[in-house]
Image 1 (tube, rainbow, N blue to C red):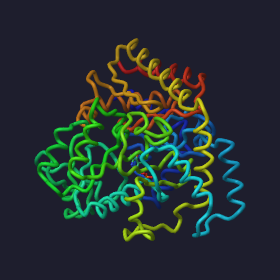
Image 2: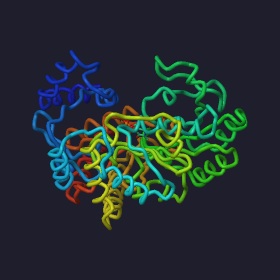
Image 3: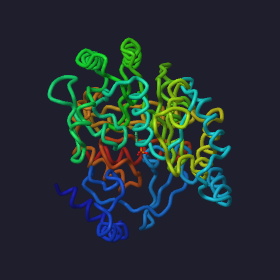
Image 4: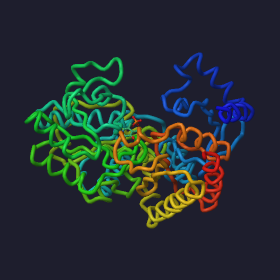
Length: 440
Ligand SMILES: *Cc1c(COP(=O)(O)O)cnc(C)c1O
């Protein structure tokens, strides 16, 4: 299409330093990046290389500035380079970067997490969300003495083997590997069911009686765009797990400290047995955690026999950033402000799309939102796949031209931060009006 060639030409003009950096990176890094979605493959463009970021803005190598709604894929809920967080990091760095020995700051962070989540009595700190979920599932298997798990299509739980699994041939049957390198023997232990489909979970329990260690879910799906749980879904997951003596694991790596201090569990009033946290809790540094009832967590080594360890777990710099971030977030009014900014964005998007005659479905929970190009409700991965992805790509490119940096994939959420001002939102809506009008 012509528009695309035009945009690409403009792109090349203003992004020449990024293009140069990409070709150099590609010689040494597979695809030029260290995590696939950053490559902009989802929007058929080349990625921007980032020089710096502050508050709501991100700046590329060519000096272009954008209002950022990626927020490092969720962590930057206070905005980039928040002065109090940066100062705390500086102070921590001066005392040494890693000890491989316990520090009181780790206990302080554990207290904040336990204080925020009613279902968590004890936590283990790790370095990534992948590690948190992988370890939580090992613990659930050990605690229940079972080996199978249930996960939902379109929910992401990091890149460890047991979660890179697609649905098998029948409903609620054993899964198959979704990436080369994942052993079929492992994939078969994961049953994959559609999100928001409680009958499929019932079928999984019926097909594999006494075998399911854990049901693993993002309580608010946010890795296929934002897809909230339908009425009663989380409640019924809780009941089914209780009836089958299966652990319910909520992967709140995105929703934890995002949709409320106590995550989706607080928002919907449902407790999980184990909870995985990441992204926000590291304040932009590599830190994640999993936690739950003491009787389960105490099965972990050295208290118990379930092995889990990490050289950089509870790293002092990451822990300092985490404590500073969570302290600021816990101040009164944080979540009201996030809600208000995101609600204004949602209303403005709805209005701009309607003005332009472009059908959209806006899914939003607190400060995470998705704008799906379709005229049907979006409740599952199949619903997301039925949206107009080509239209999203064009919208993305238009918004970028207008100074707004959205996630470069139709399957990702928009993240609003406390640093987004009313002025940022207005500027974003100006860009949205201009961009929607190009889509007819
Ligand atoms: C990002 C994410 C993960 C993986 O976390 P990493 O830190 O990237 O390993 C796991 N679960 C969910 C829900 C996520 O969004």
